[in-house]
Image (spheres, rainbow, N blue to C red):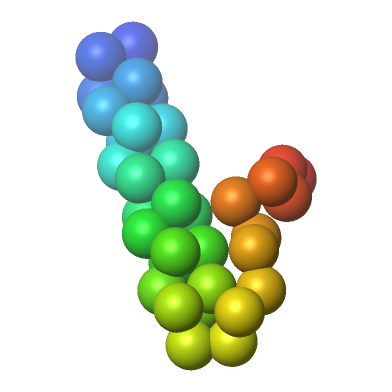
Amino acid sequence: MSNEIANITIIRETLQNYTANEISKHTGLNLSTIKN
């Protein structure tokens, strides 16, 4: 169970980083420094 949670956390962080990179490409905004 804890492995599944860890994997989900990794996927979520990867998606957040990917999304931030894509947004910065299109808008010039750097969101990679923003942490929730």
